[in-house]
Length: 117
Image (cartoon, rainbow, N blue to C red; front, side):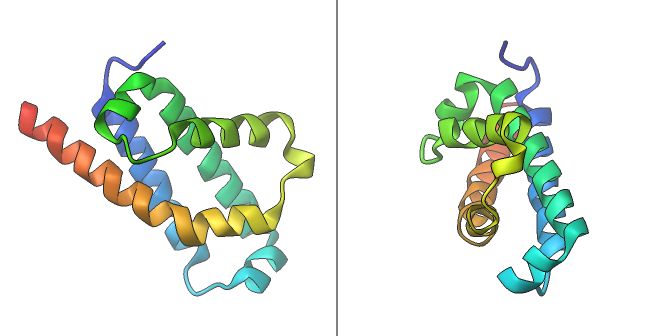
């Protein structure tokens, strides 16, 4: 069921992107993959982020059509149900390449929602 509070869900996504940025600051893939706490924390933040995306439902696609929300939701399913087979290189590529555009889109969506109020 879509969230009745899309602002809160977008804020959840943004908050967890910010956490991931803090958790991985100054790291490269080798440092990340060798740091059990960072890997666990990033996976957990991605799980929360994907759950917020699921709760947004079609609101996410409407407000951020440039983002492939199905992939974000799918990542959550993999983290929940296939966690033993998560590819750390793929997680790192998400951190390095996909979070910045998502963050920009979410900030834009939040601005749009605030402007509507």
